[in-house]
Length: 311
Ligand code: PMP
Image 1: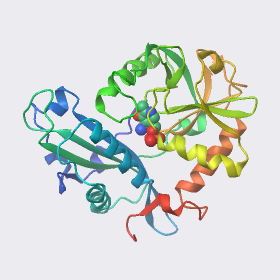
Image 2 (image 1 turned 180 degrees about the vertical axis):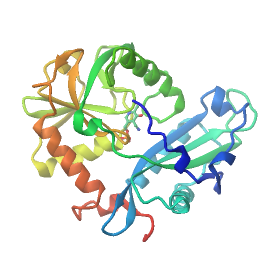
Image 3 (image 1 turned 90 degrees about the vertical axis):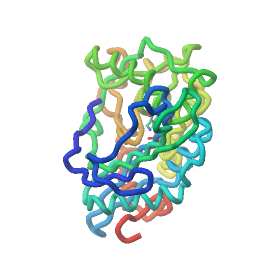
Image 4 (image 1 turned 45 degrees about the horizontal axis):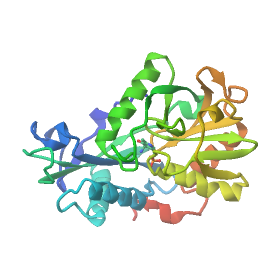
């Protein structure tokens, strides 16, 4: 779970709707966004399509909608509109002249000086950086079941993309790292499966891919939604429901999905191989279809793709 370090390639970021050199973007050391987790964010990819020489931003409107939901829950004052963000994102990608697969991170936070319940003044950033596909897309990853429990809906709601939730993710991620594996499964207090530290899970039983439903302590993942939507035409059965821990150990195939990972095959849970311990054939089919969609090769789902240079 390392982050590809592409700092040196970032020339411009947008802060408070203004392009500034990356080194000049600042947050106050007293910002409630820093100390009290008054910060929400989004992350999504844009894909370089070489035949039309354009970057295609994947499902930007859906990510901006989720950001609005997160901002509402944190009761932030006068949050930037999705339209303002959309313009900013395109401008930032263009300013950097990226011509490769890119990752976009949006952050909205309470800046300056304030208490734990401060709701402004807000700061916002758009940071775009080159981000190639993870090697585990091909190779797969082994997972453990973390000893940490998922933060509860009525404590620190996982449904929003707030920095505070990532303490829980970090603890599970560190545990996986210590055990020498790539990923962790977080269980809810009742023993059902929620998700991983930064992505959602699908596991196959009797030929049907099952994924924890949206009331199972998960982020409403856009990649998860994409997989559910593209499965129908591929003839792959899908089910959203509560998933028990033991079902992990019975899975014929399993995968981990999210913007960063896209779709990563899961090879084992707690040292028990999933299927034959190699990426499953249906997982491979989903990966191929996903790649076609995000790179605009299918001619379908055009509404999911925003062109940066020739929009
Ligand atoms: N769950 C968590 C906790 C995440 O951080 C992410 C990454 N955003 C996901 C799921 C996957 O969400 P998405 O597919 O929208 O990136």
